[in-house]
Length: 590
Image (tube, rainbow, N blue to C red; front, side):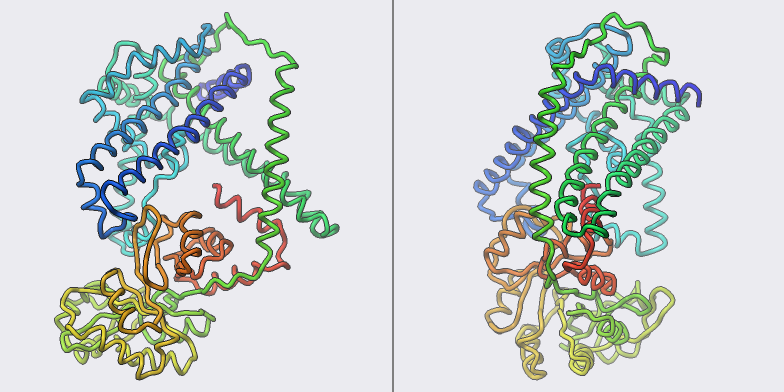
């Protein structure tokens, strides 16, 4: 612990003394990222769409898309640029830390040339070891690893929810995550070793990292814990202090609240950027110190001199950015003072205290005030519609049996169980009758299993027409062709397509799109609004996600917690304090 504390103090000491070097390097990295890598990636993607003839990429066409020769070539090119960007980004920081800790004079051009001499490794089989190294570090990337282009890589939330929905899934996830974290920590020194040692391959660096971490694993864990804890404490402390003036003003001088909120948010946004930049710099200092055993601060043969005149342009830039952000945030916050009309859609009914897709869940969702209640239907072997999500009975009934091979009568005799509750399987007719009595509309998802009758869609339309709900209900499916056909059969019916994945602009002929939250972008929201296509986002079970998309006023949010979503929507009014809006925005950044 004493050595770990010493390493941390010396890391902070070096960052302070070389602060202008770090400002220049990070400014250059961000400029390269936003002016080169991101625009080039966008251009390459649009070029791939044009060559392959697709308008956008979904789960239906992604396999054909990525198997196209031109796409394979472009993906290899983008991956290569991505890997080189990471190498140069972290390579600069590791080399700076190495020279600083030894008091050696350095120049950026010299470090650039030194990094260039090892680029050949990325055009050989060694690149595979670098990819393995990055994959191993991904579990750490979301909260620790300071790679600016990998921080957004996560498992889609709907997959996580499916994995975590069973006891076996949680155990498997915990085991895999623990294994990857341990192996990732053992491999964490690979890049500093490869970057700093002149005559060593990526594979040899990986081996050395494993050998070193075997005896120094505890020290690495302590230092990583200190890094993360210090970062979070600073973030929380500055957030509390920074929001205190807004907290006071909006209670005693409400006329000043909007402007103060804009300035507060601008200040905290800049703090977040600075703190994550410091985390990245401290990480590089610490990794180099423990790898090359430079825990004792040496005498500096080159200590940069900082003249006051150098602070003037920097202060002017910081002040200008602060003013610009304050103005933009004030305008944005003022626009957010409204009562959003986002529909709250209960996912498979209200599952808290009920089994999914049951009458009791429907009643509870209606009582909670949901605007729409989403249910799943399938066609049975006798051509009827049953309300059930899975293709088999295994998860909810604990029995062998495929829905498509059973009659509606057989299914209605079965009991289903979830979270300590039990209920019965019901037909679509049962649901419509109860929903009409409760005066609530349904969002019906047609689950396609491949054994539907030829008249499945006409039969569904006729059923909805008979119950006089054709103009008020919604029907969606993951099969675009069937939904296009359904729209032709019933022009007044609101028809939509469910996508688990989407990359690129959408061009559809349906009334709405239901898209998994990981793929929803501001550009897509604006594009769909221009086309007058509604957007339903699924499945939002985190408060921060509900805050985000309700504030963006998407047409609908599909959630297991309609009560929470309704409360959040209610608070999005001019009576809500601006402090809560600021904190909501900060949640999106974190």
